[in-house]
Length: 238
Image (cartoon, rainbow, N blue to C red):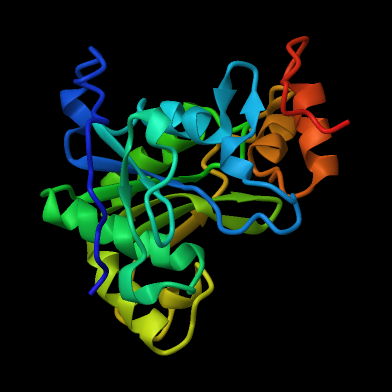
């Protein structure tokens, strides 16, 4: 059983933004692991006036009435004011352990849906998450993943709490990729879609491509800072 960490204040209502239409949604920021390629904690990097963790949590606030952080083995980012869910016995399984912890927390809190966003995707807005959630609800899906150019992004996705059992079984079988639980671990309805986010308007394809851009290395970080506008972060690599 995944052991959730302490969850503190993080609801949209606490922030003065009542969203009753999303009171069955828990938001989960996947905060990353050791950040080996970056050489320092990615989640704590500042873009503009917010860390990457805070940026991701703010996006999720738009679709969930509570947002928590998947921080691995121990709580991190206390300054964000967000609660943490921990990997528990699945420590070392990577992001899928965070997904399991988030799904367990959602179920324990009576939520039906888990909206997931990785902290190292700083260009993501609420637009794709709103579309994913609407599609998941309409089709009663177990998982709805954003897809760009034929590649699914399981860390920009919405999951139903029904997926918890298959996720746990996949981890127990040593299948720890984020999409491994989709086949062979239970009957699941999974949708991989571009969601109509790549419309005919000229900038839509570039916008969708930006959403799926990860910040994994110092070079990626320099590009992210450059693309974010005139503001310059003190955390920018020299």
